[in-house]
Length: 257
Length: 336
Ligand SMILES: Nc1ncnc2c1ncn2[C@@H]1O[C@H](COP(=O)(O)OP(=O)(O)OP(=O)(O)O)[C@@H](O)[C@H]1O
Ligand SMILES: [Mg+2]
Image (cartoon, rainbow over all chains, first blue to last red; front, top):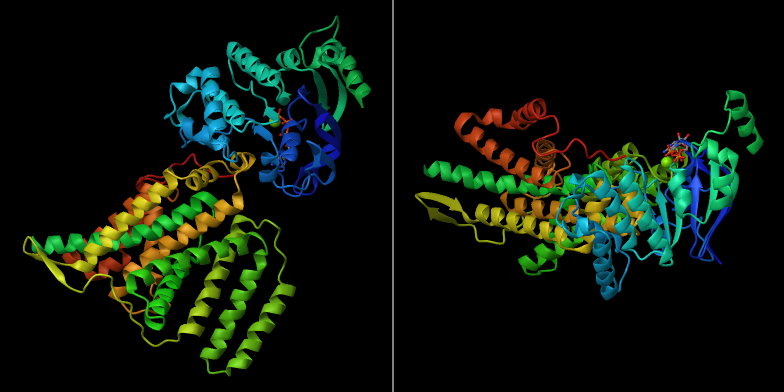
């Protein structure tokens, strides 16, 4: 069963600027799906569109989450339906404490016991957060903030978690940690839609992946297939095949369209 | 010495009123980034409701006081709904009522005045450009001006211009303190100010809706993505802000006559206090209010009464030169 499905979604900004062009993709129950793409490809726009954060978008196409069309729903309803969204750049509330942020994550939940239970579990996963419930988020390090961003999303007990470049600005060791955490969230049954520029790490934990270029899906396949695809290897995994000159680069890009 | 005590007591009382007004302005500005030019009108609404409850319905005054705070809050909440959805309606209606009231005031027959108002509402609704579904910040600011006009027109129409008086909850006596006689009214005002600030602090820091208000003020998109009911929070913020204006107006009212211009000066001082404090800082609003209130009294009594009028603007200019973001404002909290 698909927990998320996009059919020919077109979206952008200010009614004119067209960023996403007929994007179709799906996330199956329990799957971890990666979206790869370079700067400005439209990855963040994709997640914002799903979340209903851009007014009057998507202009075309349909978005189906857990069997229901959500493209005309408000962000509030979409969040309540079970989608959590970890924004690019962590989206901290600088003047809220760690504890308050976590509470906010569970804002639309009513099951007090479940919330308490999840909080304890999250403190186990992130002992650094457990040590400082009263610290203001704005004063935490980048790594701690990313942990909090993920922890906050976990507090809503989502069925699908969307993450926008969780590795941004983190040291390599911490990146590994974060991806391990995402993997374990996924293993516990939560679907994951992971937007990343760090393709090496993303393809390690993903089951399936899409490559987004200039707002179009130019390639899709299992993580295995993508890892072996020569375009992906060269452009996203930074593996240089025998000879790379500009000519081949251009040709390869063309072949995708 | 006794004069000093009197000056401080009165300064604190008027300072509390400025602080309450500034708190309402800043609370709304932080959470919704709207600078509300109808803020004083919410306060006025509170006083006129109190007058109605107390004089016409003969309710006990403390009850009238509470009910009118609720009424002001409700009005604020309703305005928030009006501004979110049919954004242009409030401006058109406001314009219409203002002009109708003007016509009536100039001696035109009531029915003709009403007809003029309706005609203007319809014409402006058709010919003025349609705002977007989500009006811009500037658009919202203009809309609050529309609400302001609407309510001013309403007051002029329904309350007329004869003098009305609201009593104080406490008796009109003074108590002796270290040789000085301090009026019970100003002590009551200062205490009420503190109580209301405490209530606001509790609301913001120890309630779910308060947490949501603070979150929305800091990162709107993220707050939305967490499933925070933005409309409800915006309703609550407007309501709280309006209740603060109502409280300030009711505390101020006993010292003067009720009229549509009751809050003209205090609200502009409230804006000044908000700017002194930093515009996005609630503690700043309180500090700004007290500083302004005390300095006004000191300057008025010890230096010159003429200087008092322009004092607020001198302070603003000084603060903005020395601390461009206000005394407690934070430059980095810039909403997108
Ligand atoms: N708020 C906005 N208003 C107008 N255009 C925007 C806005 N946000 C993004 N864009 C444009 O949309 C395009 C896609 O941007 P998007 O942020 O989705 O890219 P991205 O794939 O997330 O890139 P990055 O990896 O750098 O985060 C870019 O050309 C960008 O300039
Ligand atoms: Mg992005």
